[in-house]
Length: 327
Ligand SMILES: Cc1cc2nc3c(=O)[nH]c(=O)nc-3n(C[C@H](O)[C@H](O)[C@H](O)COP(=O)(O)OP(=O)(O)OC[C@H]3O[C@@H](n4cnc5c(N)ncnc54)[C@H](O)[C@@H]3O)c2cc1C
Image 1 (cartoon, rainbow, N blue to C red):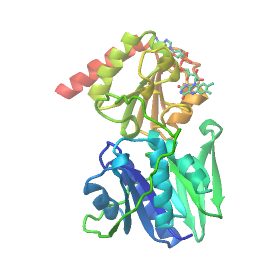
Image 2 (image 1 turned 180 degrees about the horizontal axis):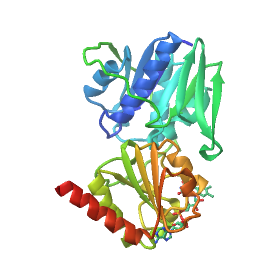
Image 3 (image 1 turned 30 degrees about the vertical axis):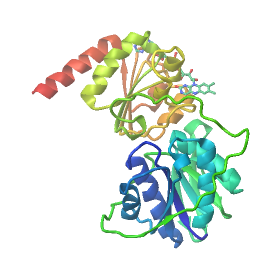
């Protein structure tokens, strides 16, 4: 193995927790494997990105930018990252499990003829081998894979690794990667762009998540969860049933086909606990379920369970929290 490279996608967002986690995981793996650690930053970014990469241990920062990359396009970013990975001599490439990371990791992996492992929750370097942990069977079991060959592309689940302590005085070299992004006829074309209007915390970064399901009964009933979320400083999520009913945006969906979250506290309201939902909260430290059916499967996973109609329990919880805040 020649090097471990973290791939950061600077498309519109700032340098934050996602980047810090990816760099922490990459830096740890490179130390365990005794190989250099580098970072690729793709897209227009300011000086905080290379500095942040250095603070988390990257010694070489490959800046991948071109006027054509000002707007995100999967094809352009895939080509740019393929070229950057080759320039960096990357053997292990770490992507974040964000929407863009999940889209780009398999495409870049294909271009590099690499092995691709998605939804990874643990990494360990043992000499030339990389041990990779990922949940299987809907989160019911954990599998450990051993990568003996490179290149390998890994998409890391967010909030699955502990952050390293940054060293703001750390230094490194920045390398601007020369790109050839010539488009061919019939290639991708972005027709419209819709920016998701989101307020407050990102679900993947939240320490507390309040989530609602079909049991809420109607779209307007999510208002009480919004009030509770504000009081707790929580992000809001939902089951797929609530999303499919059009009660909340699809960006709220948690589960197998939604977002994976790993908060300290997950509050599930009117959610039955189907395996496809539970796989999205496998990393939650504490699960509290509120459900009027005492036989609901979610109680098997929850640390605390409240068997009650949420219409009775949630207003009382809100009232108690308000009292506590004003005390
Ligand atoms: C391929 C595939 C992928 C899927 N991906 C996902 C996914 O990513 N995320 C996901 O969530 N689902 C996913 N699903 C769907 C999943 O199987 C379940 O259908 C879904 O999670 C159910 O959502 P729910 O718990 O909100 O609804 P239900 O299963 O209908 O449960 C509602 C719960 O609310 C309770 N309840 C009702 N009224 C009240 C009340 N007044 N107070 C308190 N409790 C009440 C009920 O007792 C019940 O337990 C997927 C399914 C498939 C086949």
